Amino acid sequence: MKPIDLRSDTVTKPTAEMRTAMAEAEVGDDVYGEDPTVLKLEEIGAEMIGKEAALFVVSGTMGNQTAAMTHLNRGDEVIVEADSHIFYYEVGGLALLSGAQARTIPGVKGFMAPEQINKAIRSKNIHFPRTGLLCLENTHNRAGGAVLTPEQTRSMANAAHERGVPIHLDGARIFNAALALGIDVRELTAPVDSVMFCLSKGLGAPVGSLLAGSRSFIERARKNRKVLGGGLRQAGILAAAGIIALEKMVGRLAEDHYNARILAQELSLLPGITINPGEFSTNIIVFSIQELGVTAAQFEDLLASHGVLANSVTDTTIRFVTHKDVSEEQIKEVVKIVHKIVKNLGK
Image (cartoon, rainbow, N blue to C red; front, side, top):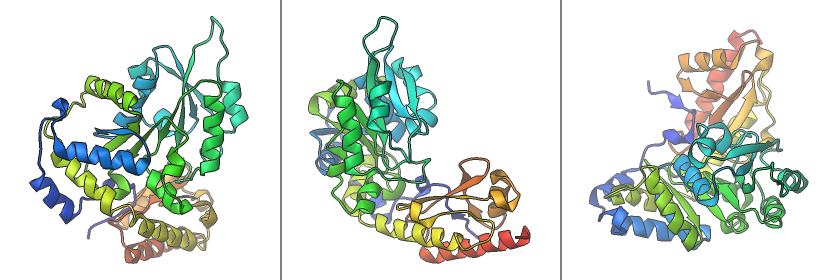
């Protein structure tokens, strides 16, 4: 029996329509700027996100690191939330690729208070690095898909801009955030100078993200993408799936949010499971198994033995991520399986 895979929305498979579009895509050499499908994708993405231009990159990490390289000078400092993806999961890329050091701020569900940001920005001093960038994340992965509101985003951006510091937004799941808030995504991206968002994950494309910003920023970023090995040739085969992702898959994210709410609510009723369903508004939920007397790794193994795949966040917490390839019926089956595991553990 095929496992129910809730490890991440990165496991989604491209739709039949995407596969057909990829096979039939008109292509050219993108390094020469001659791939019409890539150009179309970049134009659509920039318009949707409210920026002048966009650049196709192969992954969210490449998008974030390309943005950092474009904003920063070597020796600069970057302000990041302490659990942010760009700090936690990108292999030290800020130091390795941009020669920058990270200055972490412990946030609340990804939100850093403006006074915290203002305090972290370096004053002019021969001993200090220059604060070259503030990075935000929306939705926030390790905070359980937490959403930053337009007001929160503006307050953080204003604190940085008032001190001459640009802002990059890791918006890998920015459409999930906009959907959860019931607003146009451009309200969340307007205050920032650059934004990366994924075409894979919940949108279902097999490969790719877009980095968006001003035309001059994207022109500089294109060269940095080339340095990273991201100068693609007939990339329209990949971009074709991305176009469908943006045009047809954004609205269906509501199904993932609905299934996550069901899952969180049902898990909250099980003894030994600690979760507040009201904390989660997108497609990621995190719950504690500490009262069950097993580690998260042991609980992962128990889930896997019953055909459910998941990831741990800490030694005592498990993360489930809903996506287009997991149905409501499968979500209900997961609840039954967790209930069985909890019962067998004697709770």
